[in-house]
Structure formats: structure tokens, C-alpha cells
Amino acid sequence: MKDTPIMNKQTPASKMLPVSRFPVPKLKDLPADIRERIETVQEKSGFIPNVFLVLAHRPEEFRAFMAYHDTLMDKSEGLTKAEREMIVVATSAANQCQYCVIAHGAILRIRAKNPLVADQIAINYRKADITPRQRAMLDFAMKVSLEAQTVGDDDFKALKKQGFSDDEVWDIGAIAAFFALSNRMANLTAMRPNDEFYKIGR
Image 1 (cartoon, rainbow, N blue to C red):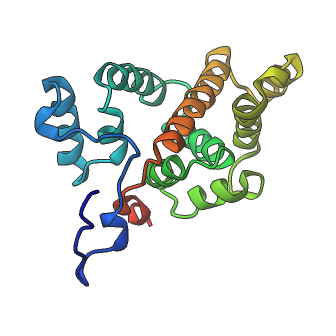
Image 2: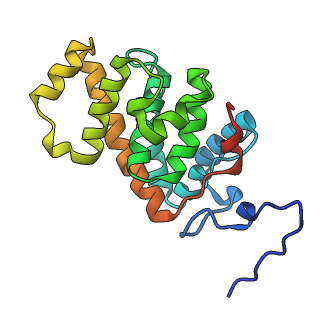
């Protein structure tokens, strides 16, 4: 049985809780490429997002996950980076993924330069301060995330009416599908959001 850490008045309760149900490797024990990536993120943001530590439990899967994540989320053409984050926040809220809503909500606030939009989208994107085009994008993303078997030609036509290209439609669906995986892994592992995320972009 593990000893319970001793808390003091300066230690938030959330800092004392585990970030995963599975073993979390120490930074020094990780393969060099993964360690370097995590240290780069830490230097840039001032902390290590827990997702990096949790997924590093399986290095090969970490590499595959991050490669696909970067391909989808770091593109400069097509959807804006803020729109990509909107998809993540809306679908993650529907999948009840606390980690992704909190972490990507923080990124969305920064990329949209809007302290309100992430909370609006997480609660009810249909009432959020977004454009009709973005609402159509999220309608489609939610369908892919929750009931992809019902996606049909009419869904594509609705997106075409809003001016989305084939590549953008693919990206909307791929982001929703990828984060459906991410949401489920986060819930499987009981991944905790870092406290720092809650304050970013407010």
C-alpha cells in the first residue's frame, strides 16, 4: 500500500492525485526522442501536460499518437487552428472527456483570442458565439464522433453549401474520429487535466 502524501496549506488537493490509472514513467527513463519532445513542451509552456506522461507509458503508441495529432492539428491550410480546436472541445464534451475539454479549451481560448468561446462550445456549441459555417462544421463533427454510421450524402451537401472543400470535410471528420480515440483513452486511464490549463487564456 502506497503512503499517502503529506499535504500542506500551499498544496492544492489536485496536485496530490494520480494522473493515470497506469504507471507513469519518469522523464529520465524515457527514450531520448520522447524525452526531448516533452522537455521542449515543458520549456515552452512552463509545465508538462499530463497527456504526454500518461501516453509515454507505451512509447511506440506515444509516437504514433503524436504523429497523427500533429498532422491533423498543426496544418496551416484549410480549417483555422482555432476551428480545429473547436471540433476537439465540442466532441470531447459530448464524450465526457474532462482532460480534452480542459486542455483543448485552453488552447482554443488562445487560438481564438476569445476567453468565452471554449466554455460556450463545451456546454452547448449551438448557442456559442460562432459563425453559421462553424456551427455546420461542429454539427458534422458531432455526428462523426457519436454516430458515424449515420453519416450520409446530405451531410456532405450541407458542408458544401457552407463552402467547405473536400480536404476540409476530411479534416473535420478525421479530427472528430481521432479525438474520439483520445477521449476514450483519457477516460480509460483517468487522465487528469493539469491545474495550469484552467487559467490559460482567461
